[in-house]
Amino acid sequence: MIRVAAYLPDGRTGPGRLAEVELEATVTGPAELTLPQLTVRDERGGELLDPTGPLVHDPAAGGGPLAGAAADQQARAFGITNTAYHIHRALHFATRLLGQPLPHLLVRIGVHNAPKRWGGGHYRLPGAATPAEPYDIAPTGEIHLGGGRTFLHGPAGAAGVAGPDGAARYFHVPAHNASIIYHEVGHHICRHTADFRVNRSRPQGEQHNGKVALDEGTADFLAAVLLGTPDIYGWHRGHIPQWDPRRRRLDPRWTMAYLRPGNGGQAHANGTIWASALWSARERVLTEGGNPDEFDRMLLNGLTRLGACEGPVAEERDRRNRFSELLRELASADATLAPTLLAAMADHGILPEGRNADLRERMQAGTDTAVVT
Image 1 (cartoon, one colour):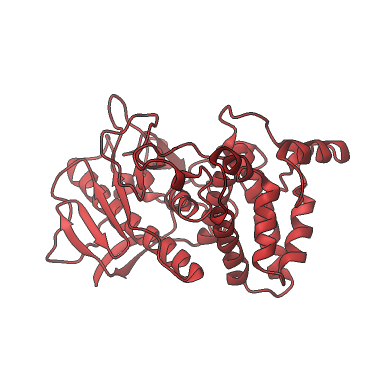
Image 2: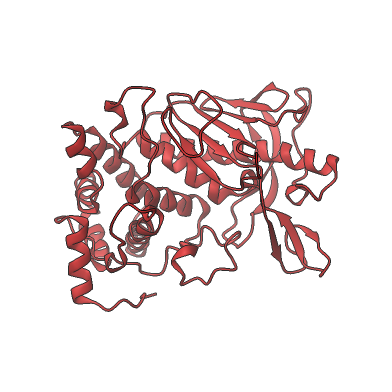
């Protein structure tokens, strides 16, 4: 066991509570940490981890281009341990509920920083993708986290260092942000359960890296569960109003009336509808005295049921993109929770029959377009 530093979710806006935790991990390189189900590596080089001692590093307000070399090195080392803690936690959550482990996951930090810095994250399989990957991607999937690009500003006393105006300034590094980490590991869970793009039927090197709305929405919902808040992106999107779809907050009741047709980059927005409906259903189960594990297990088992069906690839790809199809699989996975699930989903316009466009038309015909909170 190794003692490391990480941010623990505390339900508040911000990176979380800084704490020391123990991980069953081994330093396997100067910037690489390996656990039973994952490997986390900073691809930018440098001697970041000492295999002979504890790995309790200072977040150093994210480090970044305005920090000194020592502070930036501390921030990068902290990013490795923080990422390892959160992904280990997410994989343990999935393993416990599924009853079996997911395939090994490789996480690369600091990628795509040229010709300009990248501050995002994505989940990759071996196949065509934009931006092009400079690595041979592991067939079981990888998470890539950028090295950071922007600064977050908050009130004095918040996590960060004081800027010229006295406000706290934090260089936003995805490896320090649990919401991004949890969202990306959510895609790994989806790939090895629902397999929305039917990649099991594709050649190993020709995997489809596109994400459908159900994939994005399920990843957002899992992030909300693991963070304990529906405002999963509140830290780095705090400047966006809570009612704005770009905030992707889950407790407004986003309905199928907001579904954006077509494939023109709408997967995140449409996924928020699914995530919001899942959040409503889970909250209703809790209000009625239900166990949150039962709901989460129903979701993961439903995803597995969806991905277990076999058929022509084109037909399966279309079927697995339908909200109604996944809803039916969830309801079949737990007959006890099914009535509560179906009632909550219906409030969002998601029914167990009908194509996505049909559900959108029904909801628009019966409601106005105001978000109900």
